[in-house]
Length: 259
Ligand SMILES: Nc1ncnc2c1ncn2[C@@H]1O[C@H](COP(=O)(O)OP(=O)(O)OP(=O)(O)O)[C@@H](O)[C@H]1O
Image (cartoon, rainbow, N blue to C red; front, side, top):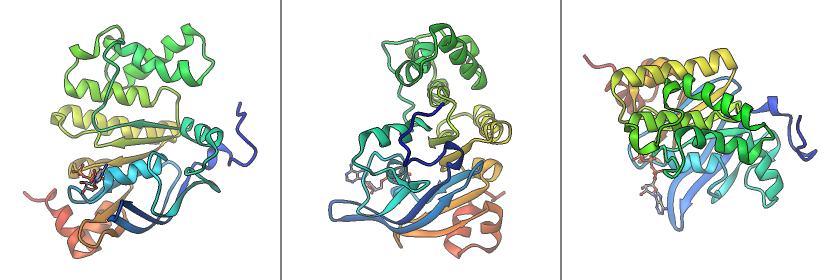
């Protein structure tokens, strides 16, 4: 079922095309001339030094921030359209979990996960609950359906936010630093979840990550944003970049291979 306007691409053509994307805050250039595709069923990691513009890129990809130049297209359709109906349809196709993993504190964990279904699907209350329980189980929080967000640890809140991002079963999932601040075991579980989303459900996952271990474990490709050059200087499999990438990228990646 898809009552999307006819100009939208079919959902299975999720790949995103970024062309000549330049991002700025006023006069301050953050990154320029970014050109890349997000491929179907890949895990694409976005990395680079702190402040290089990774979260800003994510905000451009999901249409929260408008480019200074260039475009972000889903199929042929720009996400930065003034047509709110088209933008709403595009946004429904992806799930987003922000760095803070913000949950509504006035709702239980289960209600938080059900919220997108209430807003954007016609699932019955029973279906919503069943799906929310499924998603929470998927992220290892099957017992926390009725819990208050305040009673969860930071890592659990993060995973609950990921469950909420999965609520509408999107084929494309954006995660901002999903494993930052998690203990190694929880972080490894999250890596495993990301791999399962890709391998078992064919999902495409774009994740901003500082965690080199996680990048080597799950990312099919790594997009490197250079803080000095203010543009992307590499896009390839992490291991290929470690061996043959530009020196600055190899130096960045070697930190994770030391010891
Ligand atoms: N609303 C804003 N107004 C002005 N400058 C901003 C704004 N948000 C971010 N910046 C600046 O843009 C640059 C990129 O920020 P961004 O958060 O995208 O970096 P990042 O690579 O995600 O950093 P980190 O790895 O530390 O999370 C930073 O220098 C930041 O100070």
